[in-house]
Length: 191
Image (cartoon, rainbow, N blue to C red; front, side, top):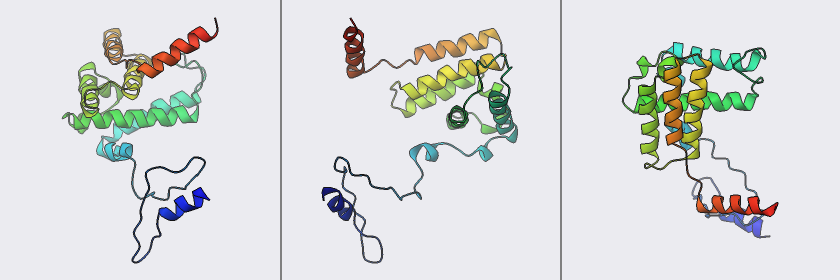
């Protein structure tokens, strides 16, 4: 009964009707979200691949194909699953967008190596931090970790890999108090 009342409160659509959205659904009430016309915040931020040189997108796709098709590749422990591939594709587009929005011209990002140049990567990571009001986040940290791994897989110079990994270490988000408490509770629970 509560769920049907909640759905009724969402309002009707059509001429003369207004859509009203209550803040929170009652427990156990599942409401389908049909607002597919509004892109997510993530999609509004990321530029499409067409805004970058075609060679960058080709290089990204080549790397991702390499991750899925070649189990004998010494840079991959195992073939990457489709979900991981989609995450990596999104991360690379997200990072290329951050670099472009940081003031570095998008047409200079001709391949993955250009994206991973430590000075260019620093601009992109700084832009993401500023966009997050200077706060560290797990998402930015995971992206920075991936950059060092990617540079290693592309066989970039040892110095560049070290610099990217140092940047990642500086971006490690400190767990919240509740997360630390859960870690402490979990560690004492077994003893």
